[in-house]
Length: 241
Image (tube, rainbow, N blue to C red; front, side, top):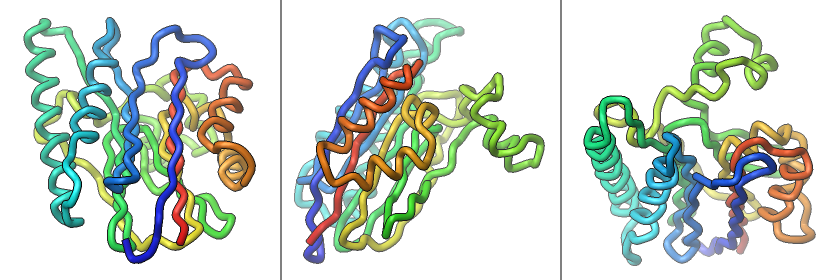
């Protein structure tokens, strides 16, 4: 990985209101792959969807090149998308078994982010926090169209409506992708919307920059202190020499 080593931490919690956790994550610095999946569908269907994504990504074999790793991620998510749609069809016309996904890959001094839905990846670089992903959500489409202001998005009555997800009614599933070089000192955050909708960007930046303690645990503690109403998952990745 061009001399850059990665250290990572992960934590998940049902949140301050819900009793069931439908989030899943992948934390595999040995493979150079991290992910967060936020399931939807109810009646444990969301847990099934996110769990299938995490399981298939975690089982990618070691020793792949950057292009092979990227291809495996795309193939495995596409296969999971099809399997979830088939399972939903078996359960009946009203069934939905779906999950958001964000994936971070790091190899050969570069990183790539792939995603579907409104789980997010942030990058803290030189003290500046950047949101790398762009939500696949109804409110993001309204913001892009100029129908609502960005500051009104979080409180919008349909803020929970996503427009793309693994297992959702879209075929084929398209994953957006962003890639760039990794710099020593970069710190990435992958999270479900239970975190990003509870903590402001300034809070995320401050907690990520804090060199004390375990960053993922600190983020979860802060979200729970704010009475997070959804499941909360945080995976943090530190790049260093």
